Amino acid sequence: MINDRLQIKQLIWHDINTIEAAKTARLPALVISTLGTFFWAVITIVTALGHKSTDGYWVFLYLPIFALISYGLYKMSREAAIAYFVVSIVNVMFTWGYTIKLLSAVAGVFVALLAIRGIFSYSRLRIENEQTAASNQRSDHDRA
Image (cartoon, rainbow, N blue to C red; front, side):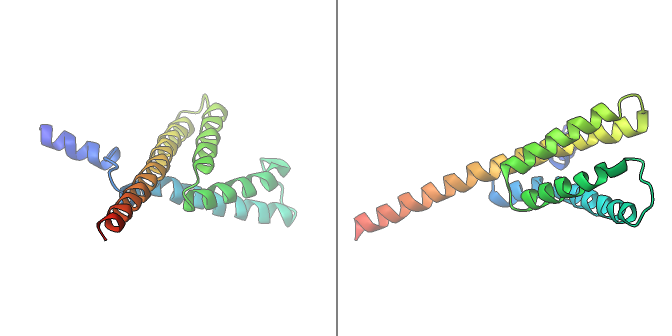
Protein backbone atom coordinates (compact mmCIF):
# COMPACT_ATOMS: atom_id res chain seq x y z
CA MET A 1 0.00 0.00 0.00
CA ILE A 2 2.75 2.44 0.96
CA ASN A 3 4.80 1.38 -2.07
CA ASP A 4 1.81 2.13 -4.33
CA ARG A 5 1.52 5.62 -2.83
CA LEU A 6 5.21 6.24 -3.45
CA GLN A 7 4.85 5.13 -7.06
CA ILE A 8 1.90 7.48 -7.59
CA LYS A 9 3.82 10.33 -5.93
CA GLN A 10 6.81 9.68 -8.18
CA LEU A 11 4.53 9.75 -11.22
CA ILE A 12 2.85 13.04 -10.29
CA TRP A 13 5.51 14.89 -8.25
CA HIS A 14 8.77 13.07 -8.84
CA ASP A 15 12.12 13.88 -7.29
CA ILE A 16 14.33 16.20 -9.29
CA ASN A 17 17.92 15.20 -8.66
CA THR A 18 19.34 15.45 -12.16
CA ILE A 19 19.22 17.88 -15.04
CA GLU A 20 17.31 15.34 -17.12
CA ALA A 21 14.66 14.99 -14.39
CA ALA A 22 14.30 18.78 -14.34
CA LYS A 23 13.81 18.85 -18.11
CA THR A 24 11.22 16.07 -17.82
CA ALA A 25 9.30 17.98 -15.13
CA ARG A 26 8.62 20.88 -17.51
CA LEU A 27 7.45 18.66 -20.38
CA PRO A 28 3.70 18.67 -19.55
CA ALA A 29 3.68 22.48 -19.53
CA LEU A 30 5.65 22.58 -22.76
CA VAL A 31 3.23 20.22 -24.50
CA ILE A 32 0.12 22.04 -23.25
CA SER A 33 1.47 25.50 -24.11
CA THR A 34 2.48 24.28 -27.57
CA LEU A 35 -1.01 22.88 -28.10
CA GLY A 36 -2.39 26.21 -26.89
CA THR A 37 -0.21 28.02 -29.41
CA PHE A 38 -1.54 25.81 -32.20
CA PHE A 39 -5.13 26.29 -30.99
CA TRP A 40 -4.81 30.09 -30.93
CA ALA A 41 -3.03 30.08 -34.29
CA VAL A 42 -6.01 28.34 -35.87
CA ILE A 43 -8.47 30.73 -34.23
CA THR A 44 -6.35 33.74 -35.24
CA ILE A 45 -6.23 32.58 -38.86
CA VAL A 46 -9.97 32.00 -38.92
CA THR A 47 -10.56 35.43 -37.36
CA ALA A 48 -8.20 37.08 -39.86
CA LEU A 49 -10.17 35.47 -42.69
CA GLY A 50 -13.26 37.34 -41.52
CA HIS A 51 -15.06 34.88 -39.27
CA LYS A 52 -16.16 36.30 -35.95
CA SER A 53 -14.40 34.91 -32.88
CA THR A 54 -16.03 34.77 -29.45
CA ASP A 55 -12.89 36.44 -28.08
CA GLY A 56 -12.96 39.21 -30.66
CA TYR A 57 -9.66 40.70 -31.66
CA TRP A 58 -8.00 39.58 -28.41
CA VAL A 59 -7.01 36.41 -30.26
CA PHE A 60 -4.28 38.42 -31.99
CA LEU A 61 -2.72 38.95 -28.54
CA TYR A 62 -3.15 35.36 -27.31
CA LEU A 63 -1.10 33.81 -30.10
CA PRO A 64 2.16 35.68 -29.45
CA ILE A 65 1.76 35.23 -25.69
CA PHE A 66 1.45 31.46 -25.99
CA ALA A 67 4.16 31.28 -28.64
CA LEU A 68 6.62 33.20 -26.44
CA ILE A 69 5.75 31.10 -23.39
CA SER A 70 6.18 27.88 -25.36
CA TYR A 71 9.54 28.99 -26.70
CA GLY A 72 10.63 30.10 -23.24
CA LEU A 73 9.64 26.77 -21.70
CA TYR A 74 11.56 25.00 -24.45
CA LYS A 75 14.64 27.11 -23.61
CA MET A 76 14.14 26.48 -19.82
CA SER A 77 13.41 30.15 -19.08
CA ARG A 78 12.34 30.96 -15.52
CA GLU A 79 10.42 33.99 -16.76
CA ALA A 80 8.41 31.83 -19.15
CA ALA A 81 7.53 29.40 -16.36
CA ILE A 82 6.29 32.25 -14.19
CA ALA A 83 4.38 33.77 -17.12
CA TYR A 84 2.75 30.38 -17.76
CA PHE A 85 1.75 30.23 -14.08
CA VAL A 86 0.24 33.75 -14.26
CA VAL A 87 -1.68 32.87 -17.44
CA SER A 88 -2.97 29.73 -15.70
CA ILE A 89 -4.15 31.72 -12.68
CA VAL A 90 -5.90 34.23 -14.95
CA ASN A 91 -7.53 31.29 -16.73
CA VAL A 92 -8.89 30.06 -13.38
CA MET A 93 -10.41 33.48 -12.72
CA PHE A 94 -12.11 33.54 -16.13
CA THR A 95 -13.54 30.04 -15.74
CA TRP A 96 -14.91 30.56 -12.25
CA GLY A 97 -18.46 29.22 -12.13
CA TYR A 98 -18.05 26.69 -14.96
CA THR A 99 -17.25 23.37 -13.29
CA ILE A 100 -15.57 21.48 -16.13
CA LYS A 101 -13.64 24.51 -17.37
CA LEU A 102 -12.59 25.30 -13.80
CA LEU A 103 -11.25 21.78 -13.23
CA SER A 104 -9.28 22.06 -16.44
CA ALA A 105 -7.91 25.45 -15.40
CA VAL A 106 -6.89 24.13 -11.97
CA ALA A 107 -5.09 21.25 -13.70
CA GLY A 108 -3.32 23.91 -15.78
CA VAL A 109 -2.13 25.62 -12.60
CA PHE A 110 -0.74 22.29 -11.38
CA VAL A 111 1.09 21.79 -14.67
CA ALA A 112 2.46 25.34 -14.40
CA LEU A 113 3.75 24.53 -10.91
CA LEU A 114 5.49 21.47 -12.35
CA ALA A 115 7.13 23.70 -14.94
CA ILE A 116 8.27 26.21 -12.32
CA ARG A 117 9.64 23.42 -10.16
CA GLY A 118 11.46 21.77 -13.06
CA ILE A 119 12.93 24.93 -14.54
CA PHE A 120 14.09 26.38 -11.24
CA SER A 121 15.61 23.00 -10.31
CA TYR A 122 17.31 22.90 -13.71
CA SER A 123 18.93 26.27 -13.05
CA ARG A 124 20.10 25.20 -9.59
CA LEU A 125 21.42 21.83 -10.80
CA ARG A 126 23.21 23.38 -13.76
CA ILE A 127 25.00 25.86 -11.50
CA GLU A 128 25.94 23.07 -9.09
CA ASN A 129 27.31 20.96 -11.95
CA GLU A 130 29.34 23.89 -13.30
CA GLN A 131 30.77 24.60 -9.84
CA THR A 132 31.64 20.92 -9.37
CA ALA A 133 33.29 20.77 -12.77
CA ALA A 134 35.26 23.95 -12.05
CA SER A 135 36.45 22.67 -8.67
CA ASN A 136 37.43 19.33 -10.23
CA GLN A 137 39.35 21.16 -12.93
CA ARG A 138 41.16 23.25 -10.31
CA SER A 139 42.04 20.17 -8.25
CA ASP A 140 43.33 18.42 -11.40
CA HIS A 141 45.41 21.49 -12.17
CA ASP A 142 46.78 21.57 -8.61
CA ARG A 143 47.84 17.93 -8.85
CA ALA A 144 49.82 18.53 -12.03
